[in-house]
Amino acid sequence: MSAEGSPIPSEILSEILSAVPSAVPSAVPSEILSAAPSAIPELFRGLFDDAAVFPPGNLPVAEAVPAHRAHRTAWYADAVGPFLCGAGRLGELAAAVAGTGPLRVGLVLPGGSAELGPALTAAAPFEVAGVELATRDVQEAVAELDRLLPPDVPAAVELPRELLRGDGLDETLDALVDSAYRAKFRTGGVVAEAFPDEAELAAFLTGCARRGLPYKCTAGLHNAVRHTDPVTGFEHHGFLNVLLAAQETGRAAAAEVLAERDGEVLAKAVRALSGHQVTVIRNSFTAFGTCSIAEPLDDLAALGLLSPSPLLQEDR
Image 1 (cartoon, rainbow, N blue to C red):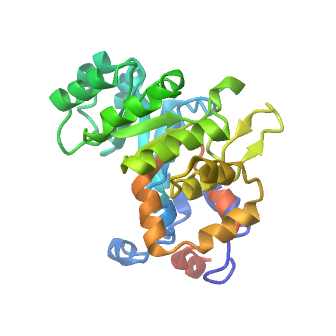
Image 2: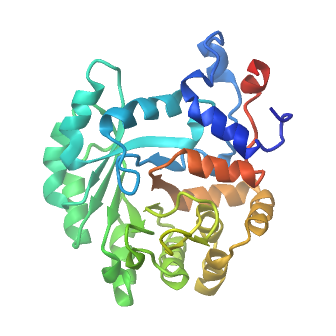
């Protein structure tokens, strides 16, 4: 493995990720692991919510749960957020985790406010790390979250993109800014129309930035840099583009960052960020759902933005 502070070669990272359960030596005492400095830079900590069971990954729950547990014990665990699960699969998830220990779960509720109460009941076997509620009525969603959600559980409210255009964007963000909840924006899907262009995404990001409203994103962001998918032809945003654009308050400047396709340009900009800028960015852009944990890590390694764990260096 490369020396401390050098990027992990892509092929070595892939090897590590394919054998995650053995990535952390069993002989290393847990107190040393907990005291060891994180191998994950602050900019990327908790950024990747595990959406393995959602399209296009569609990993079976019985496989996704042990994979998630492996991620949570690997040297890159600080980059990984909760296990995301839709309301309709909570029973399946409960069966998969029975007798295996606690699991932090983010509840994804595409059916709106009516799903919230039943989902919280069904999630009793888990540690609820958050709720993501899709709705066409932000005021109704906020009212139901206020009524039913435990005060220590965060939530994000997602509205259809067609309601976030023109005056609808300002009205929605204004309604959320006085609540305890984040906004959620969909950045991709399984059809080309599910991917917003730079101008649309920039409008959302800067609208949130000007209001100090945090948000998360979902879908289509599992690679670091904006690109055209060679198989589908879909135009994907890069999560590095979104991170860097999160500090902008002007739409034109944000759209320019979102359009950048040169990974080295983005990596150089990331390296130049101050600690204050990193805090501003992550207070805005809190996380995104990705069906792959390996792909974003692999991209960061290839761009020289991820350094190896010192424990892994010693083990190898």
